[in-house]
Image (cartoon, rainbow, N blue to C red; front, top):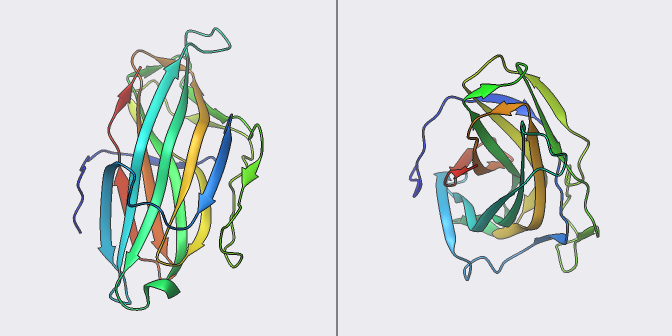
Length: 212
């Protein structure tokens, strides 16, 4: 398994099913070759196919928190989370793609962190996508509060995902909006994309650190 961007870290797995867009979210097939790849990783699955998870055109913009709370960090995420399959019967591949973050913090205000995402502003555009695909958990179900202690620590939060099939596809995010409340000091955000085949083969790629 080869990864172009490699980060090792301790993580605590938690779940926040969410996505948020101020200007739209598109889930589509193909067209991933022209984007600038930020990180990728691959695994060979049970069918001898190469399954690749890709992050591309990633930009995370931190903004002053709207609630004015000095313990809140707020950001907008733009970019694409993609998958690419090659090898025998690549078009017949099925699996699941997940977008999320690792959030690193030096300390907490109360020993708790709350993650939140806003709901889509103009909905989800599925135009042109294979009608046989099923998109799950792309609309947020609210935030999550985690008991994390005083810190330092790293939390892994899953934000959005969907069932996918075929040889390639991507989630395009524009204005994907997130906040975390309860942190003290500089906070690091590391986006990730995870692709899991229907047979359970898993590959994850981690992007660069973004710090506020």
